[in-house]
Length: 469
Image (cartoon, rainbow, N blue to C red; front, side):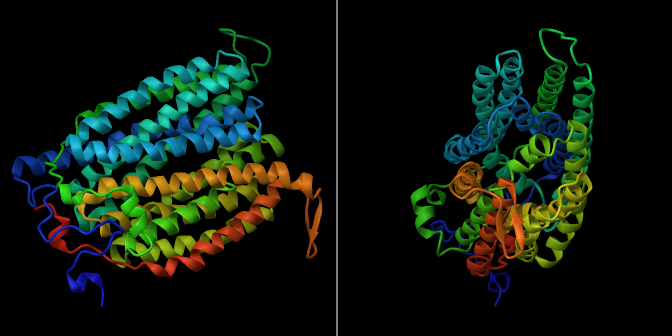
């Protein structure tokens, strides 16, 4: 029998709440509040568009800046994994602060302002020598990602209260689609700009090469866009938030209950699948820019194919989730992800890699939106911030293990067993091929071990607090 028919709150991997109504916000809004909610949901789309400019033209080019600057694989691993881990730990703090402070908007809006300011030292790092510039950028990027991760629990908690439960898939699917169009445009435009700046050659302005001048301009643009995004966050309507002491539980309690709770097993599945993906994730850009010699514009075009597929398919996945449930879409994405490394083994041309990344984008659109909606479906409103934070710690740890494992495998394994290898008629000639094989094997394990251990299980309507029409 499904959980919806039983009308009971499913296990989340957290200590159960006492039997009472869950008043994370009033069950119904009055007329003025409903108008404020509608305005906020429209403004949230505008906020996401501004954030997408920042992400597409700025954040997505931090790793290419490190790669093109001549840093090694371990430097790339560090700037990929360490900010993610720090951000996950900051989410742990964010959940506690959200419950104690009670004013969620001040937390995520303040984090947005802080992120805006962090782009200043990132721009300054471009003027410094490669080594010292890298360490300043790493420190600034850790603050940047930390600020973003700190904002996630209170933002998710707030948006979960604002968006009607029956329309979450459609709303976030359409929001993500619009934001994706802008992100893709910003990303592609920045790649074209960098390619143009590289052609400047010897002329130096402000002591910068043409390429570094291009990076300075796109990072400055990213900072301005984040400022616009923060302005919309400040304007958001915040529903009343009244956490209760029995909704609080420690990370240790979550860890102990995770293997027995639906949400806990879901988190383990997502974390292990994420770690398997991160074995190759950060190094696809390195492989294209450093090993295959793609120009920034070709690199941007190939990655744009991935982004178009990812954001273009999200509205469809959102509708499928609303009709068939988050777990089914999550299973489709998880199983389909297994073959991605195998497809990358078959090609090294821009068109071939672009085709694989189109498939990758569709798959990870399903995983991303289904994962977020599963949290909304199964976790009670009062526990969303804390459960989101604890889940992020699992994802962060899995990500850092996967990222450094990929770097160490590429650096170490070929020295122990020199390439090329002959495996069943297939020749392994490049270290990147090794981590593709490893990632494919690791993706099989969570799908075999954890995918069937949690189920579709939505909160009853009385708990989801639909917005009154």
